[in-house]
Amino acid sequence: MFASLRTTSARSTTFTSTVTKAFRPFSTTYTLRMPEQLTAQEVNSKTDPSVAKQWDNDVSAEKKFGDFYAIADKLKIGLLGTLREGTGPVHRSMAVAKRTGPDFLFLANAHSQKFNDIEKHPEAVTITFQNSSTQDWVSITGKAVTTSNEDPRIKEIWSRGTSAWFGDLGDGVHTGKPEDPRMKLIEIQSKYISYWKAEVSALGFGREVIGAIVTGGVANTGALREMKEDEIKQARSSDSSMSS
Image (tube, rainbow, N blue to C red; front, side):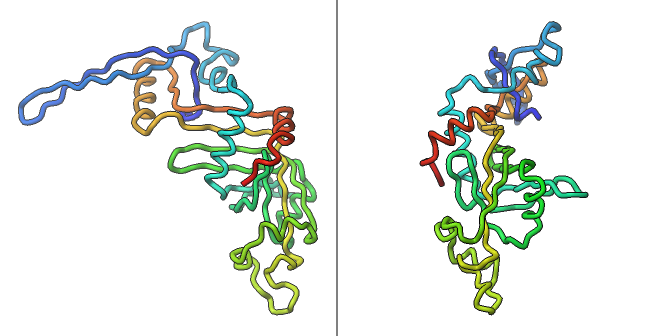
């Protein structure tokens, strides 16, 4: 949770530690950037800094979407979530075949159960990504649209490596090539996007957290942002040529 918190002002404080080594004491001084402290007036569901001030949305749409694209494009593999009758949310690891603006394209086997999930609940689809090195993450809620094997984009994104996940069944039809009728596309049209982007180093992260514990403030380690449907529609129109 702390990785997602953001505050709007900060103050500095100094820690001095004394270390004894070979019977000779020495002091090391650290100047930390401390987040603002809570006040009694702020502690409610609307103004608590750990809730109300966590979103970093006072940036341009270009900046918000640019950082979002950069995080998602570095990861390529995420969890595609669907809603299954009688079970609930189901997720599986999927490689992104292509991203166009805020929307994502997956190449999948038409016989897999996720197609049944999407047919019944096309609006209940999610994609999540996380970078284990930086802890950057992305969460997308969207609508899924499936296409037939005749979609020309299949040939555009197919590669020889793709056939390894389908296999050649030896019947001259199910060959693992673009014409294989099992190959279909799932396009996720984003409706809501949130993401967190690290803005401090590992050392800075530790300092923020320790400082918040000591002062009672709220740690500020990165930017948590969200994009809603109207913004996403505009990005879909303006960023359609920006793909990966």
